[in-house]
Image (cartoon, rainbow, N blue to C red; front, side):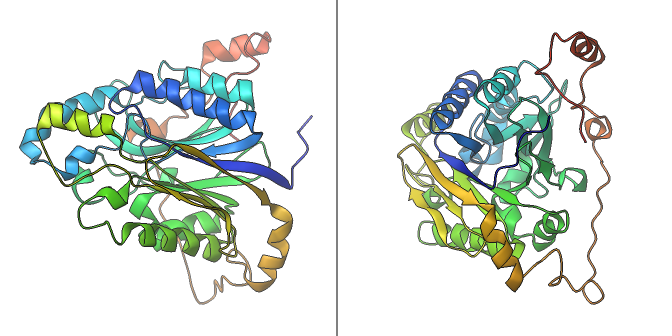
Length: 349
C-alpha cells in the first residue's frame, strides 16, 4: 500500500564541512548527519555541493601544473555510484533505517574509470538510488576537475513522499534554461547545492547576495520550495592544502549560506552562515501552493507556449548513462523475489 501523501513535513539543509579529502570519514559523517536529522523528524535532507570528499578549493588557489598529484588523489577519493556499491551502500542503509530521503552532493567518479562529475545523488527514504544529476557546466577552473554533464540527468525525481525533487549546483542556477527544464517537468522541491563561495578572494562582499538572489529567483519563478545547503571551509581543509600544495591566502575559514525558502520568497528557515555546523530545519506546507499558483503557474497559465517555446536535449552522452544502472542487478532481483532484499533497489518508474 502506498504511504499517505503528507501535505506538511520537515525538511533540512546540512550546513556542514566534510572531512576534507577523506571519503571514508566523510561517508561516516554523512550518516551521522542523516541520523541527526531523523531524530528531529526530518523527511528530506539536502547536502552541500561535492560534500564527499569536499569541494576542491585548491583548484582556485594554485597553478594547474602543481595540482596534478592532488587531482589524482581527488579522483581516488571521489564516489562511485552503483546500487549497494562500496561507496554508497552504508548511506543507502542509513536512509532506509531512518526514513530520510537525501540529495547528496558528491564528486562522482565513473565506475572503473577516472573521469569525474560534480554530481547530486538522490536517495529515497527506502534506500533506493533514484538517480544522479551531473552539473552541466563546471565553472572557471572547475573545468579541469570535472567533465560536463548533459540533459539526461537534467530532471526531477519522484520521492515516496509524493513530490518531485530537482536540484542544481552552484552557478548552474544562472543557466535559465536548466531551471526551466526542471520547471517544465513539474518540480515541487528544489535542492540548491553550494560551496563556501564567500571565503574566496573577490567574493567576500557579493557571494551571499548572489546565492540569495538566485535561490529566491528559482523559488518564485518555479513556485517551488527551495532547500539550499552550503559547506564552510574549516581548518582541516586549509591545513590539507598547505601540507600538499603550500601556503595560500585566496581561500579563508568560514563561509557558506544555507536556508529554506517559500515559493513566495519568504524564509521558512533563515540563512545560516559561517563555520558553525547546523542542520537548518523548517516545515514546508504544500497547502500554500494553491494560493501561489493563483498568481503565477510557470508550468501552466504563465507559460504561454504559443509564444515562448522551450526544449532541451535529454539524450544521454556518457556510456554509463545509456545503461539503466540504478535498476536492481539480476542477482539482487532474484533475492528480492525470494524476499531476502526487500529494502534494496527498486526499478525506476
